[in-house]
Length: 411
Ligand SMILES: Cc1cc2nc3c(=O)[nH]c(=O)nc-3n(C[C@H](O)[C@H](O)[C@H](O)COP(=O)(O)OP(=O)(O)OC[C@H]3O[C@@H](n4cnc5c(N)ncnc54)[C@H](O)[C@@H]3O)c2cc1C
Image (cartoon, rainbow, N blue to C red; front, side, top):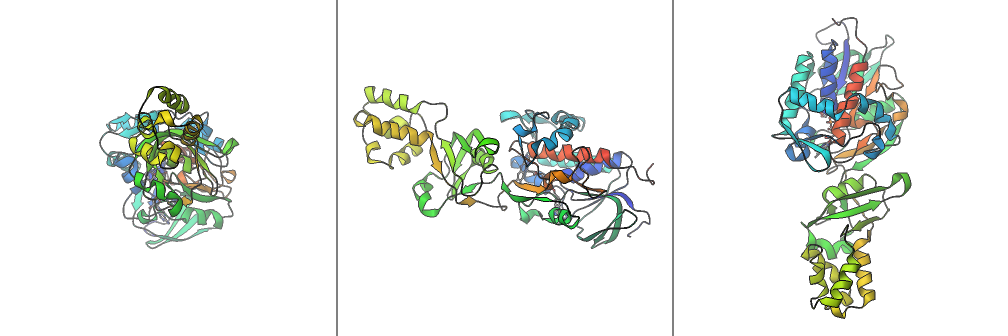
């Protein structure tokens, strides 16, 4: 062991949102904490999140109804942790550290200045807990010894811990250090995994089928968007963004977490507007072309592109048949399309699936393997866009940190 004979009370692998937060709380409870990360930087995902301002939580989160904002085989799994460490608790922490923040759209909470302020809060908390941080440090093997401790072979030597917390996150954005370490370790200890796939990710479409829409790249507008059915149904009203390869923007990122390959998505391009009534009224009173009428209800570029789909839509609205206008209104309100795929982990904000919650305690995050804990995104709990994923990182880290047993060596 490097530098000490008795094992650490806990070794935490992954110095991202969940790992750093867990380390600080455990340290401040008096545990001797070693925090390892293979990257030389901490919390890179916090740094790039929320456009550099970290959407760190959400005021609309209801800990009693996690299925409203969380996806996973058992969304109720996160109720216990979310109720014991709430968005209000995290706001309190930010306030105590003098970090100014504000609320945006739909309860989303952002740092006023920079995500860096949030990282500094976590680092100061870890420092207050006397956490020993080692970076960059690669873990090459993990063994569970007969004495109940975990031995980690690292490129800085062997380390032993009475408890081991895995906070290595999901698979998205490999170029800033995401790995499947947590999933492999879960498998090594016989825990079940829920299949992983990218979430909160732009959707792509086939080249030929998408050709009519490529000219719309850069256009954004509010839409209604749905996919799936029953418990698996997702439905949002958010902004849509046309890109060169497909669709993005909050509406598509949200729906992507519900989308399964091969399934259609339906988009209402004028939510809250009775398009047919508006077009029929225009037919009786207007001398303008259909596209010009439509442009009063949605962006002109979209209206122009849309009417190219049918010769009947390219005439003055007064000359268009009722049937043609009904068809137009219906196509705009129920645009059905089947994505070819997603932009993948390279662009995804989160990973769906992960360590199966059936093998974890919802109170402590300890797995069926005694002394081995999983927190944050590595677990099969995925939040909506809007600060829910960071709140899960904080709440699961807190539940774990409060449950970790005090070691003999602690004061
Ligand atoms: C571009 C982007 C923007 C986002 N914006 C938001 C937002 O505004 N609000 C929100 O709620 N969520 C946001 N998210 C999601 C959020 O960042 C994650 O859900 C959250 O960081 C998960 O926390 P975590 O601690 O579980 O994992 P991470 O924060 O990803 O931390 C994992 C840590 O483990 C380390 N690690 C990985 N593999 C190994 C290994 N083999 N050995 C040692 N260390 C390892 C990594 O280097 C990393 O430091 C965003 C994600 C992305 C990609």
